[in-house]
Length: 278
Image 1: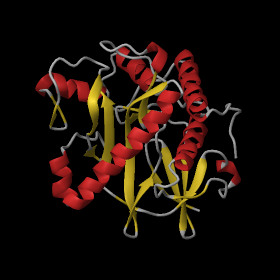
Image 2: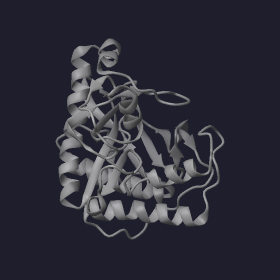
Image 3: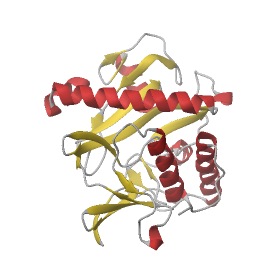
C-alpha cells in the first residue's frame, strides 16, 4: 500500500486499482486537528457510515468492501472506488445553528438564502436548505451560495449536488427522528465515478453532522449533542483562538465525547456497540 493522503481525520492508501480509506481517532474542530485522540472514534465513524451506506443502498457510493482491508485497519477502514471529487462541501441544514446562525444574525440569510425574521438558535427551518462551502486543501472552508456552485460546476451539476444532498438529509433525518435523534445539519462529499455522481468519504456521522437528543430539544439555546459539538464547545471555552495548534483535551472531555459517539451509533443503528468490529 502507498499512503497518498492524510486528511484531518482520514488517511487514504492506494492499493492496486482501489483505495483504502481509514478513519483515525483524530478529532478536528474549526478545521484544526486537536492533539488528543478520542478512543474508538474512527471505528465508530466507519461503522455508522457503513450502516448508512446500507440504508441508502439506492444511492451510488464509493464502497467496494467493508471487510477486505488489511488486518490493522479492520473495523475502521473500507475499500473504496477512486472518485473524481468535486471541490464543493455539500451541506444541508434543517435547523438554524452554528455558522448558519451567525450569518443569519448578520444578514437574515444563510448562504444567500433569505430566512424568516425572528429565528432563534436551534429553530427548525421552514424547509431544509442547501448551504455549500468551499473545500479548502488547507485552512477553513468558506460559505458560498448556490449561484457560486453554478458558476463553478454548471447549473445541471449544481442542481444535482443540491437535490442529492437534500434528499440524503431528509431521508436520514426522518429515520433518526424515529430513533429519538434530531439531525440538525449534515455535510456530504460527492465525486464522479465515470459519469455517475457518487457519495464518497462518510455519510451522516457524528463528525459530518449535528445530532441532538430529541427529548432535550429546546429552541432558543444551544442544544445538547451526540457529536463533536461537545469538543467544539469545550475548545471555545478555553479561550483558544481557533488556530493551530489546538489545546490538549482533558480525560473527562475525552470520555464524555466517546460516550456521545457510542450513543449516536446505538440510537441510529439499533445495534449495541461492542468495540472495534471487523
